Length: 159
Image (tube, rainbow, N blue to C red; front, side, top):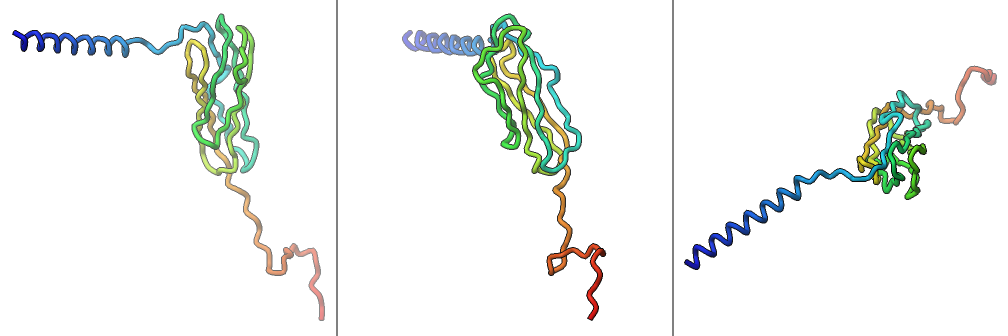
């Protein structure tokens, strides 16, 4: 009889734990905040940029919600992409702000990078994207060993 009670207790406890885990994972991870971040554009294509050129773009957004919006963090997908954002400053409903994203253009080639923004908005995690191509670094012309380039403007000396 003791074995039956122990077995039933074990089965009951296992079912309760499984039910609790199912209930915990079924809860959506959506904020109940009424702040909302709406961007004019979520992707910016730089096109082709000169090596060491201007790799900065300002993403404009507006709080289209009904509560103040607070951005708690913004991180680039790598060290070559650096976001600057209004830190822990409430953005009132209807107000606009910018998140400035700078890409290190001393890296030649195609790129697609993201910035992940965390806030108290209804959608607490937002991703914006930059992309483009950085031209190769300019190459220096080869100079003769004398250090001067023969551009044809200087006549040769006669001996």
